[in-house]
Length: 269
Ligand SMILES: NC(=O)c1ccc[n+]([C@@H]2O[C@H](COP(=O)([O-])OP(=O)(O)OC[C@H]3O[C@@H](n4cnc5c(N)ncnc54)[C@H](OP(=O)(O)O)[C@@H]3O)[C@@H](O)[C@H]2O)c1
Image 1 (cartoon, rainbow, N blue to C red):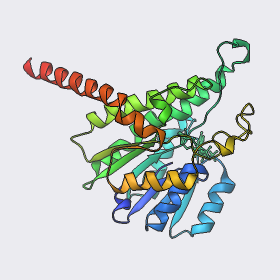
Image 2 (image 1 turned 180 degrees about the vertical axis):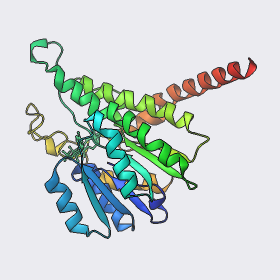
Image 3 (image 1 turned 180 degrees about the horizontal axis):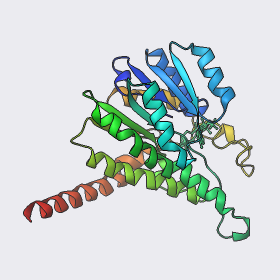
Image 4 (image 1 turned 90 degrees about the vertical axis):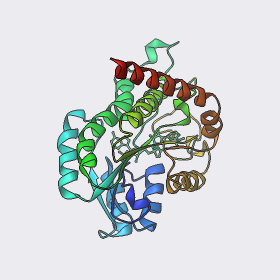
């Protein structure tokens, strides 16, 4: 899901990839705040319903599958050309599948590749293509990504999903540091389990009543929006808060020390 950053404070134009779950819920809040939202996703019926519900003066939509890596550069150029006021990209798409390596015969490697591509590799490519456009702007811009509490602690049933979110989290830590002298703010949202389609039986038949797992979507949306409005660059919700505030601090302090040492070393040469 994607949107724009300044929109949260003023009201230019936003791009949100969404049409169900967390993406849809946050998009609706952005629209309530006067933000123009460009929704992106695969299901045309959801995109059409979204634009119809809000009207073309508040929302537009582009059908696109972000796992089609070869098509990403062309897609980004189309978005930039049709929405030159865009100043924030919000990447939120994700999928989750179980994987039991104790039963290797049940594993579908193509599904694991799709999961890693959707949750992580596509984000790298989208960032590469959008960053020059965002960095050229004279105002502050933002790249917002949805990771997960599971980026910090893995869950037994979905190791590849957790690995994709851990990869995203590590990359975002470095990206924020690399871009710290630029006008691009890097924001990470860490949802706990939230009641959406993510755990739905149509995707994960081994889970019973998947749609009921986690906190209500509205509670999540309230907290995530609150973090965005406060200007936080890491927004943990629910369970993720305790983890981010405890052991994850040590990891990030170690990263800061290592970064400082490397920069000091580079400076002394
Ligand atoms: N719900 C949770 O418990 C939870 C917890 C932690 C993190 N998260 C993360 O939150 C994000 C949103 O998930 P959700 O809970 O809102 O689940 P969801 O209801 O299943 O929504 C997933 C969204 O991603 C889009 N999407 C998936 N694959 C895509 C692709 N290849 N190209 C374009 N769009 C794609 C879907 O739209 P289309 O199907 O129409 O393309 C849908 O709008 C994900 O990154 C997820 O990992 C969720």
